[in-house]
Structure formats: C-alpha cells, structure tokens
Length: 263
Image (spheres, rainbow, N blue to C red):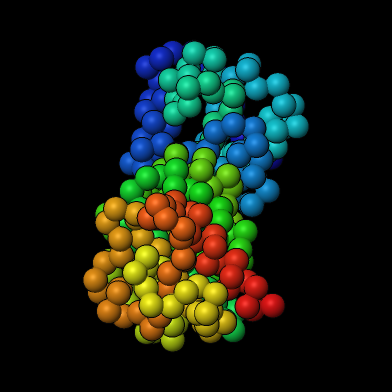
C-alpha cells in the first residue's frame, strides 16, 4: 500500500527540521540516508523507512515507486526544500529517515562459533568510523561496538562513509571501557588490542579464537582498561618515518589477517 503523499514547498515545514535533526543524531531512533545508491542500499537491507523526501532532481522512477510503497510517509518537495533538508553540498533529490536497527548482544555474535567483534575506541572522525564499518563488514566481522566519546555511527557522515554497511552489520553505540571488558568476559571473547607498541607482530598473533578486536584513534589510542584486559597487544610493523596508519587501514590489515587464519 502506498504511503500518503504530501507536497511541500515551504521552507518552514517542520519536516526540514526532522531531517536536520536526524543528520545530527538528534532524532531519537532515526538516521538520515541520502542519494540514490545509499537509499537503495537501505531498502535492500530491509530497514523501515520512516519518511522519504523526493524532489524533481531525482529521476529514478523505480526508486520513487519503491519508496512510495515502503515509506510510512512520502513527501514531494521542491529542490530548494530538499536542499534545506540535506546534509550534502549537492543533493541528489532523495533523502530518507530510517529506523536505526536494534543490535542486541546476541546479534553482534551472529551465532558464530568464533565471533569477531570490532571495538572502535575513541574514534571521533565520523568518516573514519564509517570506513571502519565498511572494512569490518568486508572482512567478515560479526559486529561492531563503538564507545562513548567517539563518533556516532548513525550520524550522516558515518552513514555515508560506511556506504551502506551500517544498514547490515550489527552496530551498538555508547559502551564505556568497563562495559566493553564485561561484554568480552560475558561472551568469552579474547581481547586483542591494536597497539603500535605491541609485543606481537600481527602475522604472529593468533586471531582464530572468539575475538574482540580493539582499535583506537591515532592520537588518543586505546583506553588503559582495555590495554590491561588484552590477551594480545598486536602491532603492524611500519617502515620509518611512518609512525601510524589510518584506523580503518590498520583495522583492515588485522581483520583480513584474521580472515586468512580462519580459512
């Protein structure tokens, strides 16, 4: 059944503020996705579409039909209004509000005998966080925990940076260090920390067990509580004068090594 259609041309419509709030992570339970490709990814992932806004700039008739059928509210807007709703410099004519998927603990493990949960500790750059989510999904991680004080994985820049991975990969936001350690103990996950000063080169680390892989921001690093809980502190040898890697790149090296070891 098609959603009721509303035509909006006024720059004062409250829908504009709803979309802006979702972009900033300030609309409880909802996130913003924009652009034809990303909206298609959300629909293919089966996420509930709370509200959809389309302007004449979007010429994708098939996407328009899908949104009319699946969105709870469907808004026809002018290009100018969509520009005010959008967090992009050049909007593509389509933006949607999506229900943030639940990620209970069991879902983060996905019933895997050797789950691999990635912990993003203190990543403040949402683009880096989005890239980390994309890398984690590509390498077969079962879920991601993002810690307090770091970027929100459901804000617009992180959603775009993940290129749709945040729609499919179980992600839970807001744990503190003690909560992460308790999560690992509760599910018998070995804590492995990526650490430039770690004693174990990544090629010699055992990454086959049920694993909680912790990566931190380049500047702040990993919280002391997680360093103390680590069974292995793993380093990626770098040729000087390079001292560190982008966190998504470092995570990719370790995650694909884990994938290789697991066969």
